[in-house]
Amino acid sequence: MTVSDSRGQQTSDQPPQDGGRPGGQPPERGGGLLMGRPFGVPIYVTPSWFVIAALITWVFGGQLGDVLPELGAARYLLAFFFAVAFYASVLVHELAHTLVALRYRLGVRRIQLQFFGGVSEIENEAESPWREFWLAFVGPLLSLVLGGVFYLALGAVELSTVPGVLLTGLMVSNLVVAAFNLLPGLPLDGGRMLRALVWAVTGKPMAGTVAAAWVGRALAVAVLIGLPLFSAARGVERTTTDTLVDAVLAAVLAAIIWNGATGSLRNARLKEVLPGLRLRDLARRAVEVTADTPLGEALRRAREAQAGAVVVVDGRGEPIAIVRESAVRAVPEHRRPWVAVGPLARDLEPGMRLDADLSGEALLRAVQATPAGEYLVVEADGRMYGVAALTDIEQRLTAAVSGR
Image 1 (spheres, rainbow, N blue to C red):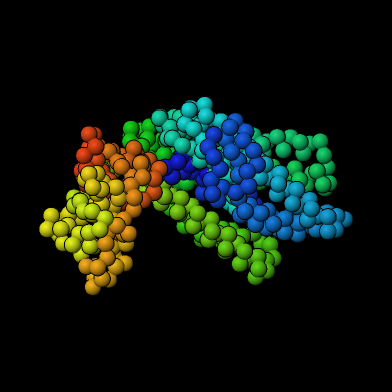
Image 2 (image 1 turned 90 degrees about the horizontal axis):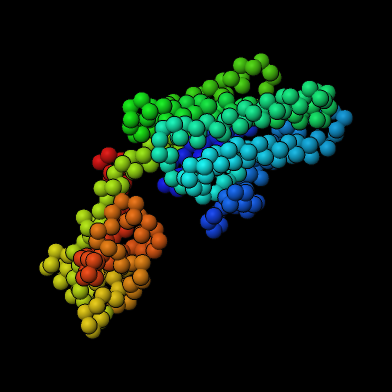
């Protein structure tokens, strides 16, 4: 699964070779097939889930031919049922995270079932390290409980029967899910638990994130190298295809863990620098022109005023549009004296007027609410302060997160 907040911080539990896992709002584009809304949280199945379901059906169905040869081709139907039942267990794991998050009033955006497991997108971060620890631990705990339930159920059936094979597979896969996710590196649940422990000891959430992220990167390297070696050392005769499949799965898992750990670290740094992101510091000086002003003349005025933006005003001097920087670059220099700025400007929508005192998360929310290349920055009394370019905001965040 993956537990994440809406700002991108996340842990994940997604299935390794046999099923483990690394790594109330409107439906979103790319969310997948909506399956329901338990506790008001939408659950989506992404198209990639059908790929892993087909893979599990193929691999498990082939193994069933050795265990229950009398099934014939029906073994693939049974294998598909196992894939569905396993992901139902994954969903229980995700719901455990969701219920704890709702209990702590953190908000849950959605749950997704996808190629390598599940993702629980949690909107806010836990306020204390122990809440963080419990939020992460409850998922593997439920997987352990499910593994125990399936083990107890095995006592009522014969191992060589269809129910016995299914229960054995579900028991093993849930125990693998729990064990894998307890590994102490981001983006796994164990990584968030490690982060919580370091946070509790040092009093610094960032210290916990750094420690868990680097352990996660080490885990990624261990998976990349260790999983193929482990498969080869089992002493079972293996084909070239088996070896290739192991190598590909190891590479994909390693990439997911590495990227998740790196993303967690970047998002933690972003959270640290975000309060210092102030719109007033980012705004460019702007010159005012009418819509029929030639672009060459508007740029000349901007150079004289050492301004970095051009705002179109009406007859009363009220700003009505911002000349788009991308449109200016598209006009050849020799044409600029003959092209008016009006067609190159974007009309000001309500969301494109931003208070100069906006900062941090409030600034990002305002920009996300109305996507645009430039925004008019105004004082509390409505006077124009300047223009903020989205590229400037992105560059400031990128530089801060990367440490430049």
